[in-house]
Amino acid sequence: MATEMRDAVLHLFRECFEGRPKEQDYTWFVEGKEGIFDALESTDFQAASRKPSPSCASIAAHAYHIRYALRGANAYLGGPPQEGDWESSWSKQEATDQEWEELKRDIRFQYSFFLSARAKSEDFKDAETALGFTAQLPHMAFHLGAIRQLMKIV
View 1 (cartoon, helix red, strand yellow):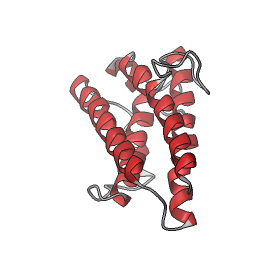
View 2 (cartoon, helix red, strand yellow):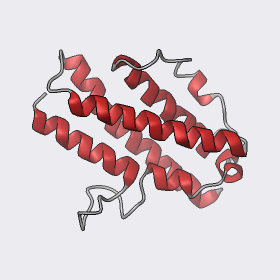
View 3 (cartoon, helix red, strand yellow):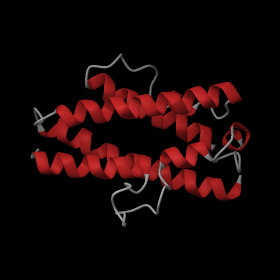
View 4 (cartoon, helix red, strand yellow):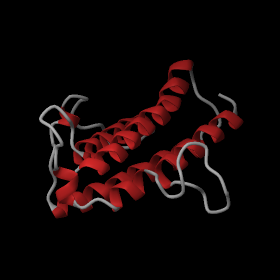
């Protein structure tokens, strides 16, 4: 993958988590500081743990899954091995105040690790690696949208 494409994906990935960069007066798909970090910080553990219906995941579940996905990507990039699997990443729907704070901190850590490791990559060894990197962006954008909708009803 060309360096320009990598940088474009990383820019959009940052926007997904951090919102609009301070030096820009526009965004590509979020408004202002409406990224994942802002969404999680503006939600307390009680609201995050509420499920709007029995068949709907909580905000906390989305956050646990975001962490799972980032950890998986980071394991591929030399981080610690991934724990659990896709299904188990959705099993925890609630968080205590302490768990919620730790989860938010760990998501920030995993995000920073991912950005740092990917920013150092000049190229990808194969198409599957490039696809895995690029797929992180729509995956995280999906969860941001789901969390933003849940914030309106919990």
